[in-house]
Image (tube, rainbow, N blue to C red):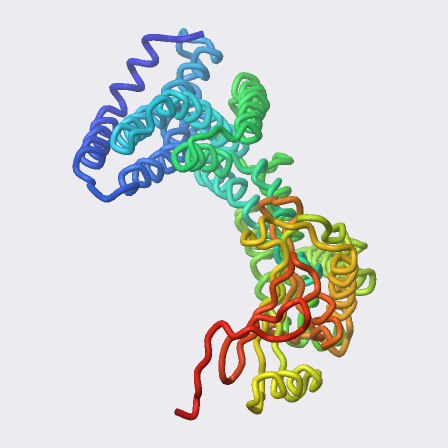
Length: 485
């Protein structure tokens, strides 16, 4: 399937571009002294080439004159496709491989260099085939570029929307734990994860490696069918295929409407108040929706079905977010198990005149000085205690506070409120920390219960000093100062 003649033709036709790429790569690798910057530049160059090369190599499928010429030469479509894709992959990969090798030698990555080179060849192939397939979805050069951009950015749009949903509707948001799997929608993201993890941590992310292999296999099949069976008459015609404008426009409309609707979860007591504040966003989105149909049809176009579709999806998105508010995000709010054993827990609390006066009175009594406020940090399972297991009483109390925080999160009187008190915990030493905003501070009695546990450390900062609460409830001075001096 490989055609030497066609490969030489591609090489000669792009020789000036290839020469420029080579010069930029060598100047960057040999001349950039800042740590990591050289590799970053090569990665940016590789990403740009992964979009540019399909446009240059497969431009003929969108040109009525060129497509007749290319498909009539004594080279099979299979050979044209395989040779063209290979040329694109090598153009993307070779400069990146030079950058990886140079960086690896400078940073003494050793045996990780061959691993990275293999990984990045797979990544270059997957991203290039992915973009080439998207370019062939359309029937014109401009539409092909739009499809590449639209589908490449779409995973990021979904990521932002889901992340906004969790932040606005689900307490206990972790460090992107819920949205982590979205990376499988983006070959670029998986490629970057492979490279950064290999360079920084010297290990392989097998999930991304498998994901890229799946992308390469799936889109190679789609690319083959799209190119080999492509009708010549499609060149220059309107891009009406299912995966072109009709699907792209509707996908972006749905995601953007849901993104706007996620704002209904913060600071609004009713839907009319939200719609009043968000009206301009809906007007701009509807204008963009109509403009997209104008670009799609190459003429001014308006049909009664367009506002009907817009209103219908708007209603669905608002009904969905309304249901989230009334069902604790369909149960997602209580998705995590209680903290037990050696789970790490942290609480940051604030007490003042509006809080439990019993604690401030106690501090005044213990320190002999009038205390107006107290900032408190409670740590369970700190390393200094060799990760001691928390007691059952501590576990139950923490769960009580967390459960109350979830209930308060959805209380209408707390809509739009924010604060500086929180409870966070890390299950089983994992990578994600689950954070809950506390609307009510623990009582003094609850604090004394926590202080009895050897796995718990309570540090208090007041007007006059920093103290540690001991197991018997008394205070130990860490440092002191007098603000009156």
